[in-house]
Image 1: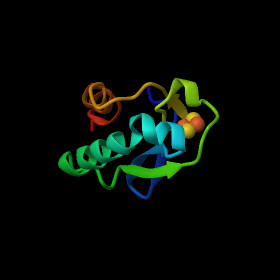
Image 2: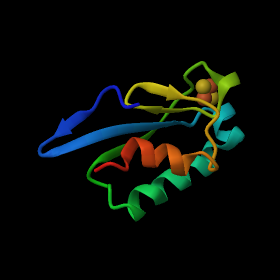
Image 3: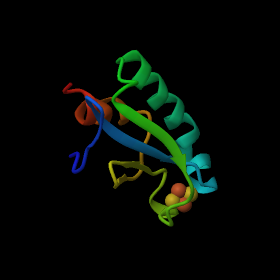
Image 4: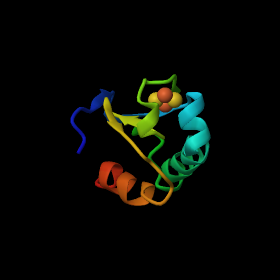
Length: 92
Ligand code: FES
């Protein structure tokens, strides 16, 4: 699923951006952001994942959206995040 990775020194870095536009934020990204942050810490992947917020990506109706390595993933919820993050980041 990951189409592009970035390197930083010896690390492979995945970039996760969480849309913090008002629509995605109110549709659930406030909770998704907390879940993703906790997942990264609990799985010890702080050196492998760059996490940030971003402004509206003009796909509000599909939200809440996150962007992983330039791929938008829509209708994200804490219910799908464990499998999604395991799939994206779990094979380290
Ligand atoms: S608020 Fe997230 S795409 Fe518009």
